[in-house]
Image (cartoon, rainbow, N blue to C red; front, top):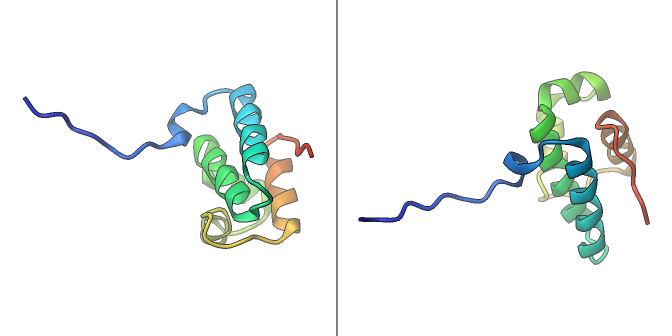
Length: 93
């Protein structure tokens, strides 16, 4: 008998807006000021909600959203605010 493992995907476990808000807050708390880490968290939430709808709601292209929320780059604050607003979330410092 073999055990099959697969990569953890946070987006699969973000089902409600309360889950998403709690996840975002936890990521902000743990980020240590790393903007790319927070962007990646927003990307996970965006995938859970649907990237196509987010692109429509923000007016940004899907490809640019995937790149901005990949965690590999730090997106502009303008992009972060658009995404947070479109996801019906709030940032808390």
